[in-house]
Structures are given as C-alpha cells and as structure tokens.
Amino acid sequence: MKQFVLFPFSLYKDNKYWVPPIINDEIASFDKTKNPVFEQANASFFVARKNNKIVGRVAAIINTYEVNQQNIKKMRFGWFDVIDDIEVSKALINKVKEIALANNLEYIEGPIGFNNLDKTGVLIDGFDTIGTMITWYNHPYYKTHLEALGFVKEKEYLENRFLFDDINIDKYVKASKIIQKRYQVKPLNFTATKDIMPYVDEMFEVFSKTYNKLSTYVPISDAQIEFFKKKYISFINPEYIKFVVDKDNKIIAFAIIMPSFSEALQKVKGKLFPFGIFHLLKARKKSQNVTFYLIGVDPEYQNKGVTALIFEAFYRTLEDKNIKYCIRTPELEENTAIHKLWSHFNPETHKRRRTYRLDL
Image (cartoon, rainbow, N blue to C red):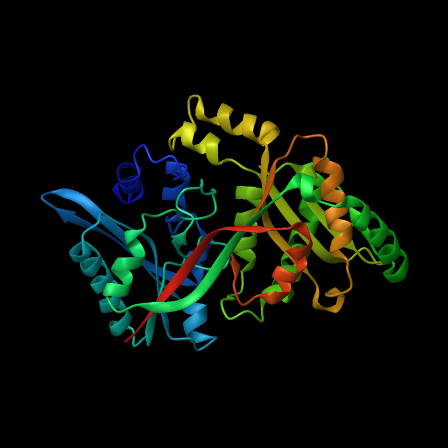
C-alpha cells in the first residue's frame, strides 16, 4: 500500500502544480480497520510494473449502497496514475473491468472516490495552476488514454476562483439585514472547535438535503461523519466554519472554507514529522488563498438569499488576513444553482475536470 501511495511522488517529481498528500494519512484512508467508508464500499488496489518498476496504479471501487440500494450498477475507479504508455493504462483498466463484470455491473466511471467527500475527475484544462489538497492533479495525456480505451465523457466539473478584492460587501450587508429580519434567521460564528462539534451531525443533514438530488449523490453514514469530525473539523480554523440558524436554533445553511495548504504540502513532501507540521500550521494562519470546501442550504431556504449572511460573515473574518484568491472546489457543470450563487463574484474558471464512462 505504501508503494501504491508513493508512486505519484516519482511521477510528479519536481512538478510545481502537483500537491502531494500526507503519506501516512493516505495509507490510513485505505485501511479497512480505520476508514468507515468500507462499511459501504469494497476496493481493490493495483499497481502496474514494467521492467520491475512501478509505472501505474488504480483503485477499483464498488460502493455497495449505490449498487444495492440506489440500483446504480456502477463500477468506480480512482487514484488513477500512469506513465505516458497506453498499454499501462489498458492493463490497469482491464483489472477494473474484470471486477465489474464479475459483479454484474453495467458500466465503469472514474476517476472518482468512494463518495461525494472524495476527490473526483481527470483534469482536462488548467494544468499550469497549482492544485488543491482536495483535488487530483494529472498529466494532459490521461484524457487521451481514457478516450483511446473507449471511455466517453460522463460528468464535467468546473473549478472557479475569484479575487477577494472583487467582493462587493455593501450589497451583502444590506441583504443580510433584510433576510435576518424577514425569516428570523441569524449567523453563527465560532472561535473554538469544541463549540462547533455539537452542530456537525446537523450540518450533514443539511448537506444531504442540499445535494441528494444530484446524480452523483451517495449518502454519508454516521460512522463516516464521525471520521470526518476527527480528521478535518479539529484542524480547520474554527472561524472558517459558518452556520445560519432559524428561530429555533436549527441549522438551515452552512459553509466551510480552508486556508490553502497547497504550497505548504509541497514543502512537506508527504511527511508531517519532524518539521512538516510547522509548514501546515504556518499556512493555517498565513495563507493568502482560501478554498471554499463545502456549502449547503436547506431546500426550504434556497433562493431566499440566506447565503448573504454567510458571505458577510466570511468577509468579516477574512478582511484583515490579506487574502488574494477565494478558490472553489469542483462543481458539476450541470449544477446551475451553485453557479448562479457565485455569479456575483466575477468568477474565473481556471480548471476543468471530467469523469469518464465505459459501458460494459
């Protein structure tokens, strides 16, 4: 498994746009005894060798909830990395295909992870800008390989960014006051992680309501939520998590942003110790870019402007931190509601990525 995780470190050695993972965290995420995602997923991990050297890797994934409960007969593949040799890609995809056929599945889609919280998509545009810790980077030939093997476009995702200086905060301050009064809602801001934890389960309820109509949605289990709490919530700056609650103190909207750890992770080179942790802690306080990781609004309050409260709250948090770019995670091209939400910020699409499908 360590060889599986380490392969991209050689493939992207000296690439200034690739963001490496933390090696031990990546290995742990593939451990069935540590990651509860395996309660509703099976996975096989393969490396390809040529002249006794690793030249490719792939994870073949079956989300059992998706197959058995949603009746979507899909074989997933992810963590796909290869040298520029179509025969290597073919060998790896053939292993995925074997497992799919053995399980009577109807098509293959990838690269995608276990569920909606994982990385997704082959990068098809934007190779010359640094990635994020929550996206895959790849060479341009990945697209060529998959299409040569018969894959066709399934889903396209846009990655957008906007300048913090382009935010017209006066507009959101005015809207926020009106909406708070009209709907009896208010924002919640935090300075301590312990104050956030009691709300996290409820936050995921809103997450599910927000995204369950999207074609890519797979439910997140209670055990996975607990795993997310331990792995991420405790490391995110508490002031970077915002909630909006109704008159009964129930969450109706939320957003999580993170400082960009990309450059820090490049310096860390996969190892937290002995000195890597200091680069991450510095980025946590000093990064000039932030990533909008998750945002959700209860359908009952969608199109009512409650995000104005979130945007105003984040602006107040960030205005003294010399933030340059606000970066958004990949969003489905077909998700017009989310694109409309961000349209007032003069966004720039700086990356595109795509999942590919092969019918069996």
